[in-house]
Image 1 (spheres, rainbow over the protein chains, first blue to last red):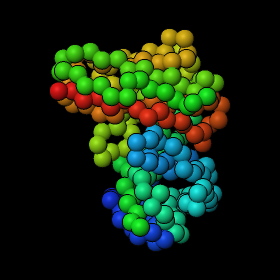
Image 2: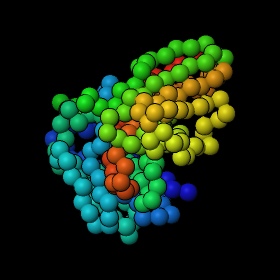
Image 3: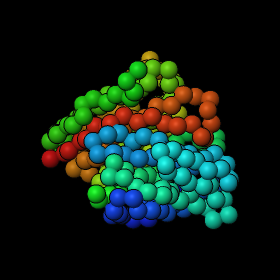
Image 4: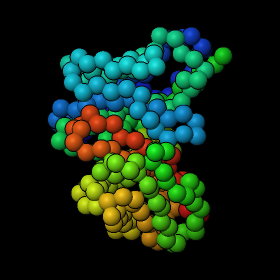
Length: 112
Length: 116
């Protein structure tokens, strides 16, 4: 079945460090890919998305590129801030479907 | 619009009791979803409504669970005869219809259920 696998956390970085959170997927159809973020005490919110191969989603300095050949959608940021501390979820949605399938989440801690 | 609203935010109940949660989606959104999230895991799909019609239910949704969206606006999720394994965060999300698979779902803050 359709699934998402992302790197286990927690990930602990110092401020201004480079961030990569790996995400790979398995899908029977042609998915759209998402990164959602959950800040402490808040609900899930969309960070970025890509709907077709080679698309790059970007927002708030975060980027992820839809790589069909490697079935990946890795999240990157060049310089993290303390305010980026949160749980990050990679997710997919299949064309013609209606539900979103999430990975287990990766908790990020950024130290000042 | 203040986004997706869920009530209550927290619920503690004794095993065997029934509980009901409410979700108010973003007003113009036709699609409404319920998810369950346990500690250290991502949200798992439970059920989906298009307007008032419940179009899909996950195998995770046992007979003790029922969801309704009577007028295509707010939705309720009821759990009967709660068990300790039902302890989780229950998330509601909504989205507009017609946007395809790339449509963003907007999530509420969730209802945290603890069964003791």
